Length: 299
View 1: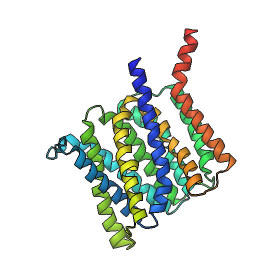
View 2: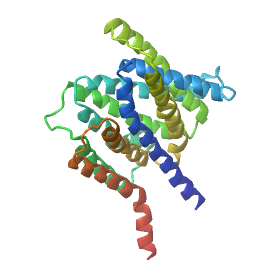
View 3: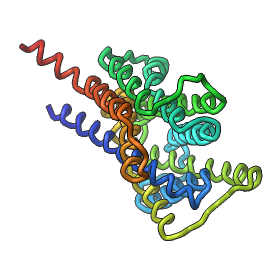
View 4: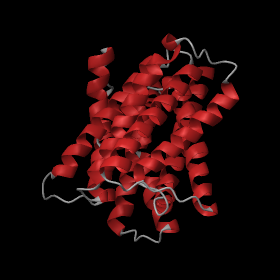
C-alpha cells in the first residue's frame, strides 16, 4: 500500500510540472519582447546551473565525468528538442508545432520497447490514442499537409521521446544530483555556443534587454520552469513508467491553453475545451484503469 501511495504521489508531482510548463508559455511570450529566443534559453539554463551548483556543490564530483555523463546525454537531447522546436516555429504555425511536439507520446512506447524491451499495457495505449485525439482538437492543427517547419519539429518530437525513455533508464543507475546537473550544464553550454554562432554572428539578432519585469520573468522561468521542474522530473519519473509519464506531460498543452486565455486574453473555443476534456479523459483511463479492473475482478 505504501508503494502505491508513493506511486500516485510521484505522478501527481509530475502533473504539477505541467502546470509550471503551461504558465511558462505566456511568460516566455512576454520575455521574448526583451530577449532573442536562444538568448532566453541560455539565460534560463545558465541561471539554473549557477543556483543548482550553489545549493549542491558539496555533493557534486566535478572531476568525475563518469558521474554525470548520462546527464550530458539527456542534456543534448533536450538541446536538440529546444532548437528544432524553436527553428520549426519559424516555418509553421504554433498549433502545428504544439500538436507535433505532443505526438512524442506516440513514439514513447516504441522507444521504450527498443531501448528497454518493455511492452506497453493496453490501457496505456488506449490512453495515448485518447490524449492524441484531444490534442488534435485542442491545438486546432490544420490538415494541409506537412511543411518544412513541421518536418523540423518532428526531430523535436523524437528527441523528447528519447529523453523520457532514457531518463527512466538513467535515473535508476545514476545519482540524481549528477544526472540533473549534467542536463543543466549541457543545455547551458550548448545554448551558449549556438547563441554566439547563430544569433550573434549569422543572423545578428542577439537581444538581451534587462528590465525589472523581464528579469523577473527570466528568474521565474529559471527557478520554477526549469530548476524545479527538471529536478522533480528526474527524481520522480522513475516511480512510474515512461508511457504514463508522457501522457501526463501532454497535460502541458491543456494548462498552456488555459493560461494563454487568462494571461494573454487569447480566445478559447468550444472545440478547444472539448479537446482539453478528451485529453483529461485519456489521462484518467491510463492512470486509473488498473484500479477499475481490479475492483471488478474482486467483485
